[in-house]
Length: 287
Ligand code: C2E
Ligand code: CA
Ligand code: CA
Ligand code: CA
Image 1: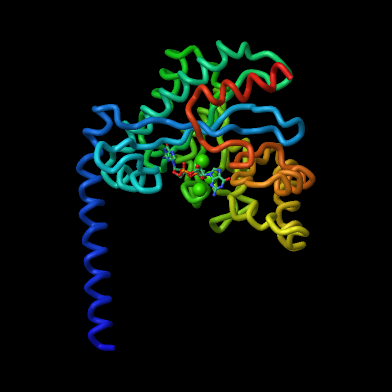
Image 2 (image 1 turned 180 degrees about the horizontal axis):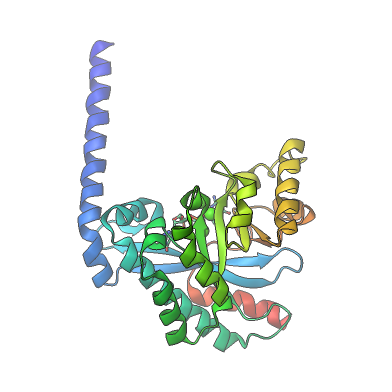
């Protein structure tokens, strides 16, 4: 038993080493990856729960690593945050996504009840504290010719916990310009619901854990009450509610009945190339 335990430790150490080397390797490869154009963006549709139309998409970045293939953001965004690369990388994602939204709008015509297609872009906490955020965003929107109200910036709830006025000022300015701010992963932190009034936020993105609890039928009555409560509070504060991680029609229906406004998840579409969104939106427009 003792030697088996020893072995297990060796294996664990070896795995930890491999992970560390990979992490180190990935970290050192990150800056060149941006220069070499190894990042790309997939878009996942945001669907209106009331009428099922595609209203826009969330931009999700990926890294096509020459040796390791496609690497997901959960593996490299934290590294980019630690090294500061997240600022130029995030700016690149914003610029690409804004241009893409403009392109969808031009091809799609922005007709129909759904209005022009919009794009959601994730902001890391480092970008929030970076002094160039507002001006960069203004420049990017102007260069692309996209209206500010076609852009929504997603900020995690944890990034805004205990936020002081200095942190909120750039978000307020963006919000005054017409850019929507969404509170991402809502419900995962120590949500201070009263705090919502202070934040320049238009949208709550309910974390996937809430959607998961709608999987069983009938769903847990307490979970239902919680979501119902969040939705009614959000609406009374003039906030829209988006739900993420919708994987089944039953979840979509349950969340629609609970009053959620917009949904996102594999049930509608996995994240995919930009032309896919255009096609999905086109289906809506033509019936
Ligand atoms: P997030 O912002 O919460 O994005 C939602 C994640 O859920 C995405 O993972 C998406 O692919 C995944 N997802 C969507 N629908 C479903 C579903 O029905 N079921 C399940 N199980 N998952 C679903 P992804 O693409 O791996 O991104 C992970 C996280 O990486 C994002 O979480 C976000 O925090 C971060 N991220 C992605 N792109 C960027 C970026 O450009 N900048 C920054 N700062 N962070 C990013
Ligand atoms: Ca997000
Ligand atoms: Ca989220
Ligand atoms: Ca998340």
